Amino acid sequence: MTLARRSIEAALSGGPKPEATGTSALRRRQGAFVTLRRSAGGELRGCVGLIRADTPLAEVVSHVAVAAATSDGRFDPVTAAELPSLSIDVSLLSPLVAIRPEEVRVGEHGLVIRCAGCQGLLLPQVPLEHGWDRETFLERTCLKAGLPAGAWRQPEAGVFAFTAEVFGEE
Image (tube, rainbow, N blue to C red; front, top):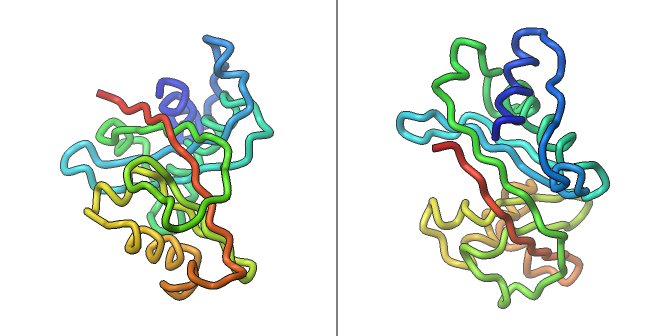
């Protein structure tokens, strides 16, 4: 989280990009998402990620943290004055695996649904936050992709699962 916060601070102030220091885990090639929430109330303020595992984790976290703060089209960009009132979660993603819809485990799996050139992704914590069952989770992932809710039932739809290790600020 320190890298994510320092990357956002640097981007908002025009300062230099922070150096990634620490363990070899930051050199591992892995996908990640950064989620920003208002500390008071937990309201979503930005969430951006990369599922590709072809870039060192330190670069992914730094890039998506800045994107979550400045480029999530659902929200106005975060301001420097606002940043201290935000909490940051980093979700480290496992590789995607094809899965049958009936194998999806709410709270364990995140989902990617691909169909008709569209793709939607929801992190594993999302259905828990909203109290969704498996079918609702599948439907909402389709809607996130801009597809009809039942698109996951189409034979040409690809349903993929991943897990996430989530680190949050206290």
